[in-house]
Length: 144
Length: 406
Image (tube, rainbow over all chains, first blue to last red; front, top):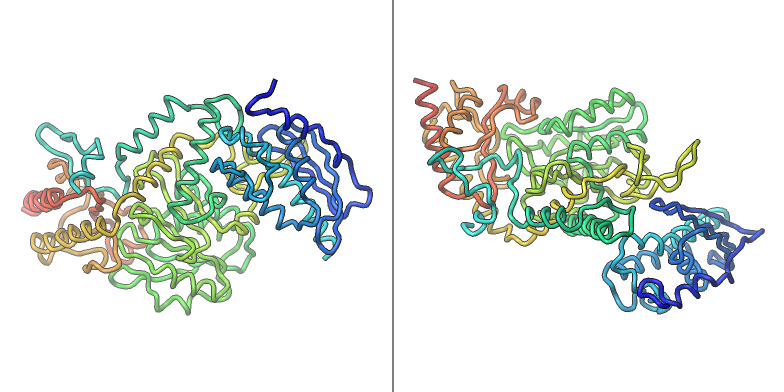
């Protein structure tokens, strides 16, 4: 049975494990918790020319957070830490304003339109952005 | 402005049988308009729950209301919401900066504070100076109770790492040229904290244009409940500060041995926040933002001029204004001493006529010491005040002088 908050596509996306795992040669790593529930997301990244070349995530979190990590991972290649920060900020604004699309240029994130009325869950969507930004900053620092 | 008065239920009462209330103590606490009361009642009766914990409907509503309140404050100040920290008030906000930013200062550094300050913007810096081995630099005021701008470039030197001044004095009413002070502070490499307790109730602010680095305001002076205030700071400054209080809500992750902390603003909001007061503050910001503040200020300054003229007529050469006599660059508040009377005796007699004034040192003993008086009486106006309030005040003062000087 599909659900406004948990559409089938979200469950399918959450189970996408293409980017799950770790990178032995990671240039940067960060793990962050959702302070409100204890969910945890980690990212390993490698950079090329200051931009994300490859990544892997480690997610122990709710379905919403798993789906967000999967979507973000699929769209992260070639981006900088500032890009990830900007994406997260724009997605947050879209969630607050109940915008369509939620994130201009990234229709896949409309998967989360059902949670715009559930502000306590915004942090679930945004945790992967914060963790990936932190991992990418660490990698940028290591290469600078 | 008559319609505005009707928005404040407290003003409809007689303070004693046949004695209407003339509230002229807005500088101490602003009265609460109906939309703020409505917002608080609606919150407490339809959305009362803790925030950012549970996902049930009431908790969602409470979280939305709390976040909406932060957005309303941010819009009022023209700043990003993530730079707005809810505190218990101005005092708590300044103490937070004095502790968390103060820990980043080194022995030998200096903090510059003006003589005009409320104790809330002096004592925390004294405590910081004692704790960290810092020097406190005294920024003087002019004879008419304004920050002495001419003295600033000489006193704010390279040792000074932080300047703390009021946006508008709670005693003299003088408005500080914040952008000018910010330029002087920044040229010396110092940050600028501005105490907006008195200024914020007089209309929306543009903090980026002011150029300060920290700004604090108090909810109850805006007509919100007690127990909520705001610290605004530039995000990189906030991000460099350690939390003042530890507990729930402010963490990222906790193990038995150690913890990591959330980003601002949550890093500085340990424990269950003042949710309903914040909702009230958000409603108060929206209420004030909707007023025509140019018209409101012109109305209040006209009343201020009438009050000053009336005082001079009634008290003659016994009158001493604690602040400027003119109406330029000032708030609609007037502090004064009538020679031969004590401010508390004056205020006591005024109260019989339903006129609420404040008497005392107004938590600004340094300023009063410069004037050579222990205290003063203060009338502080809000947009809802009218000529009847001023006339009642002046009549009461004339009465009081007959009683106290006969």
